[in-house]
Amino acid sequence: MSLKVIEGLSHIGEENAFAVLARANALAAEGRDVINLGIGQPDFPTPEHIVEAAVRALRDGAHGYTDARGIPELRAGVASDVQRRLGQEISPDNVLIVPGGKVTMYLAIMMFGKPGAEILYPDPGFPIYRSMIEFTGATPVPIPIKEENGFAFSADETLELINDRTSLIILNSPANPCGGITPESEIDTLVAGLDAHPDVAVLSDEIYGQMTYDGAPHVSLLSYPEIRDRLIVLDGWSKTYAMTGWRMGYSIWPDQLYNHVRKIAVNAWSCVNAPAQWAGLAALAGPQDCVRDMVAEFDRRRHVVVDGLNAIDQISCATPKGAFYAFPNISETGRKAKDLAGDLLNQTGVATIGGPDFGILGEGYIRLSYANSIENIETALARIDGFLNR
Image (cartoon, rainbow, N blue to C red; front, side):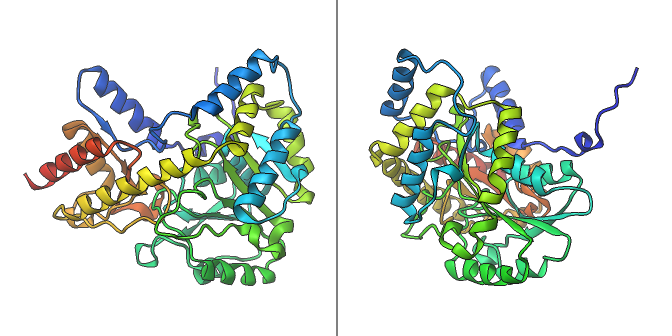
């Protein structure tokens, strides 16, 4: 007997960082000394006042269903935080609390993806973008993210890719996996060019918006009122507050789309974990020194990673301006990126991710997460150097 499932399931990809994590954990279980620079999650604990807010909510009886959109207090808290950080006014009625940032990608791509449609996405970029586009039957169209552009998208190149089949553009700044930040001038040009394409929606993935360095500003697409009626913003708590395992994010939707996603929420997950929502409110409304301290530590590690990589023969590394990833160029090694990443893990115990796991334009690069201690980072760099130059 052969069960017939929809064709789209055969096109779904994966996020290989989790496969690398599983392999790294298996090696560690065998007694190997493994340093994981693969998985993209902060190595800090969730701040205590956030944890306590969840515990208190449980003790106070937050055990039942909530509004599918998110508790009103948290949606208002998101609106207040956006005003505080970005100077942009949004209505809590446009905020949807979701069980993780990926859910917003899923919702937006499912909403605009269908056979015959084209969706633009960054390449190299977060692998779930392309995976979900292919699942819907839409055609994925890569926006080139090039080292010579500081790993930022080019507005002119992006606009040239738009045609009458384009339904959605996905943007990500600060970016995973490259750490690039798109300059305001490029965003200005893109938004101006979108005037000619009023039926194209925009998904702006801003999950790393508070992780920038050297005074580089985060320019939110919320700053452009001319596209607010077709703009979807993805953000959340996972990276900023070291809450990856809490599985909670939020998105901001234009009026014309909000009721559609509200109904999907009702049908798909009913509501987000109740005590986690109170923890999310404590994160936004509480002291922000935990965020500043974590980003400052990432900044210190960033310099160690970049300097160490550039000291290794056959490797060069541009300085990332945001997030917590380095994307060194390994083309001079003559090795395929995924093969090199596999050998580094199996032979040296250093977990990294091959660039092609982030897109067809990722060949010649590997991704290192510097969400690890400086001591471990320095040991990992020494192992990489020894492996390449022994």
